[in-house]
Structure formats: structure tokens, C-alpha cells
Length: 187
Image (cartoon, rainbow, N blue to C red; front, side, top):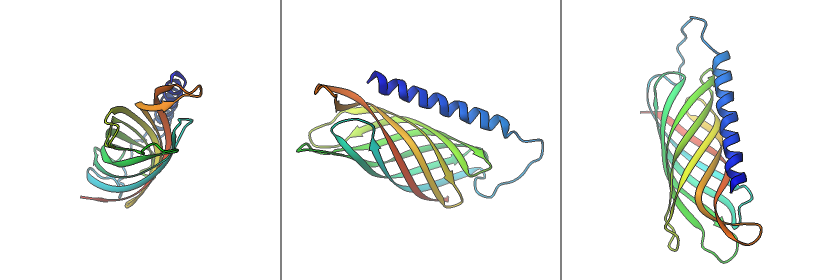
């Protein structure tokens, strides 16, 4: 668990450093340009995602669907709220772990109005019959968006979902790499 936590902290630090350096080097030289895709206002997106847990038994893979409400503060910065349903498929005779993620986030466009970095934090609320715990959910990511299409790659860390350690003992905390493909539009 300590290794997963340290790796997630390193990943978040690298993404924040990358966002800061790209944003600093892409400062406006005083000219104002209007972008077509992300003027101030609301957007709504519907996404499908698939993920692979990082060395966390008994989970094999994750599939989910979500809805994201986004408020564009400017052409470079947005606030997000994401929820939906995801399912970790479990090997063996155990039941799968279905959960509802609820995340708030901040999106920063670092290359014109297409390439962005996203940081989200929230909770994952299990809804399976035999497991009713919740978990803190941390999710940094990088993505590409245009007027209608959004594709992103993210890391998600669940602090309290149960895992089976290499020595057969049980523990908590796991990470996952996931790909999200979405269709979005202005409201």
C-alpha cells in the first residue's frame, strides 16, 4: 500500500510540474485570441471507460460509464463534476465490485484549447450486495478534447477498496490506469 501511495504521489507531482511548466511556457504575449471550443459556459459529456488495475488482486479489469458536467471558467480553465457507474470484475468465485464514483475536478488546457490536464478528487461508493464500503478517490489525467469528442488517460487511486497482498493477506488501497472516450456538447 505504501508503494502504491508513493507512486500515486509521484505521478501527481509530475503531472502538476508538467502542467506548470507547459502553462508557463505557453503564456500569452498580449494578443487575445478567441477559441471556438471552450468559451465560458456549461458543457455536458457522456463517456465510456475501461481500466486495468495495477497489481491488485483479485481485480482483473474495470468497465464503466459516466456523465460529466463542466463549467468553463475561461478558454484555459474548467471545473468538472463527474459521476456514473463502474464495475471491477473479480477473478474467482467472488462477486464483482460495482461502485458509483463522484468526483469534482479542475481541468487546465495546456496546448491551445485541445490538450488538457485534469485533477479530480471524490469518493467511490460501493453498491454491490456484499460490500458496502466507500473509498477516497484521487484521479489525475491527461486528455484531448475538441468541440464534441473527448479522450483521456487517467490514473485512479482508491484508498479503501480491499485487495489481496502477494503474501495472501488482505489490505486496502489500489490503483488503476483507465481510458475514457466521451461525446460532449455545450448546454
